[in-house]
Image 1 (tube, chains in turn yellow, cyan, purple):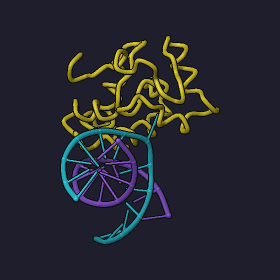
Image 2: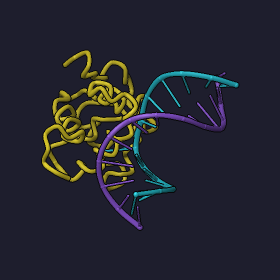
Image 3: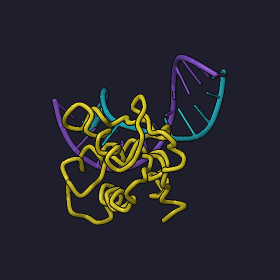
Length: 110
DNA sequence: ACACTGACCACTG
DNA sequence: CCAGTGGCCAGTG
């Protein structure tokens, strides 16, 4: 991976870093904000790669249902859930409670 | 150089 | 309403 700033990955990281604490966003929302609607998968892939970078709060990014689809990719059993809970969220069945209320859409809020 | 995959989403039938 | 399918980009075998 290069250091190109126009890189899709870099764009994703930039947005994810801007997610306010206590809020969460979705892969699709980020992809849409980056004018790459159908590239939500890539956002997930970017997360996978960024997962090594401590700067990127990947736990604040979930799928469009507010489900912790990526929890299996975090170290430990339910680190992702723990992190979210520690930020004030409620998790039930790997899903964020009141997801719509804590949802943060870069297209709208940024 | 080719084919397949992936932490997804939206559109059909 | 549920199930199936295509589509996007980049990385890996």
